[in-house]
Figure 1 (cartoon, rainbow, N blue to C red):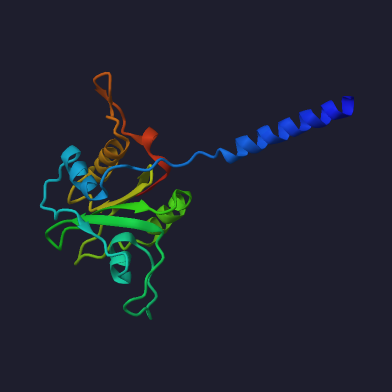
Figure 2 (figure 1 turned 90 degrees about the vertical axis):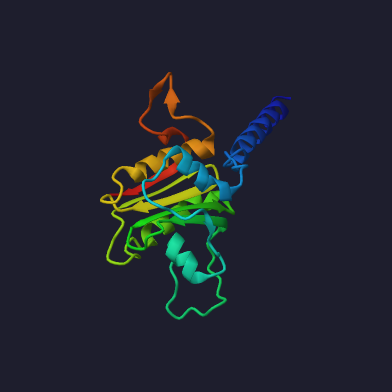
Length: 200
């Protein structure tokens, strides 16, 4: 009888541990239209120079994927070659003047488990000197829910804009205001997920 009781308890514990292990926290999906996110960010963090409206990144075009998202492209790549990005969709907005270093990109991932890997790829490979004679010396790559935002800007063009964009993005995607009790907080780091990748 004691053996049966001990085996039963062991099995119950095993089932409990298995159930706990299977309940890994899933990343919540952002329910809104990704195409509208950039406009919402601009409402919360205006910019003082002209930008284009949100434009889709053609994920089947290796050169677009490289220019806006930073995914490496083999020099010998041919047209029609699709780079595996792990993204469902992406939109960008840049300065209307080519000599102003500024780019804002939002992207939705296919598999939330790979979001940190995708962020790191973007952060390490994006070309911050893709403009004529200017460079973005501030770069931020962050995520909230299943959405990644990459923003890069020249601090001479707009000092503090990169951090303002991070706060605006966090507020738009999470739906939470960064103001508490009438006092502004130091940003929305608490609602961002994973690592905050930053340069400059």
